[in-house]
Amino acid sequence: MLTLFPEIQPSVSSRLPVSDGHDLYYEQSGNARGIPVLFVHGGPGGGTSEFNRRFFDPEKYRIILFDQRGCGKSRPHASIENNTTAHLIEDIEQLRKHLGIDQWLLFGGSWGTTLSLLYAQKYPDKVLGMILRGIFLCREQDIHWFYQHGASQIFPDFWKGFLEPIPLEEQHDLLNAYHRILTSDNEIARMSAAKSWSTWEAKCSTLEPSTGLVGHFSAPHVALALARLEAHYFVNKAFIEDNQIINNAATIQHIPTTIIHGRYDMVCPVRQALELHEVLPEAAFHIVRDAGHSAMEPGITDNLIKATNQFALRLA
Figure (cartoon, rainbow, N blue to C red):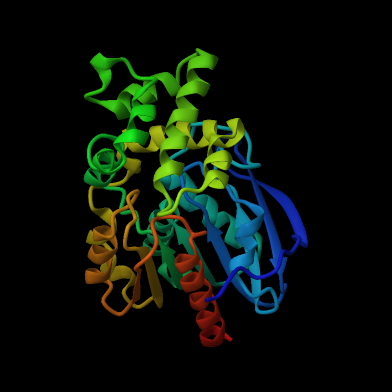
């Protein structure tokens, strides 16, 4: 079973000012003349981590990480102003132009699959291929499953913690209740809600419990951006049309794609991956039998690195 490549340091760390006062952090590592690959992180609001560089052979790839608006090292932190899916798509395109890249490989997980697919549908000629893990189609029913009724039946013990910040009379509409608190002026209530939101996601993301993941997600800097941005996007139905990705799949059917999804993914149930594969029938499709949602589960990591190795041969 394949594991992450050895740790590497970025050769370039910089910032890209984009529209409306946002300033994006980005970095590059690996081979400056290698295959350009963009790591598209999840959330919205998840940000990147050092280990994200390690899914790619540094001798073969020009590895590009960036933090989307409002999260990670991008500024202003946890900002929902001028922060929509359309903005993020254009930020990616601006970054591509800034780096002088003609085409690149997209590597996205969870919300990163949503954003990668939407970017590819708008700029299909700029995409060499896609490696997509934990498909999230970001429709109303997909959001409802995780934040109102569905995953709550699988993890009722964890669900109690998610309900805790919300008054009983508002629990029929948890998304809007959380959004109200996370956008309020009450800093203590805001942070408490952010930790409950982010801890719920972390606890449900792996087949086996991961204290490391829970610790990372519940750290204040991460939790606030993740919770505020996810609530902002999901209340607004991700600023996209319902079923937009599936309805526009014909525009990207020619792009080489690998889909990887955990059988026991409770954040984004595997049905979403099956629906995507039905409209992208030429895509390679791997259901990992002993995994949930996280890229760090051994079976998911193994499949992701096999995919990056295969694309390296294909695109050499």
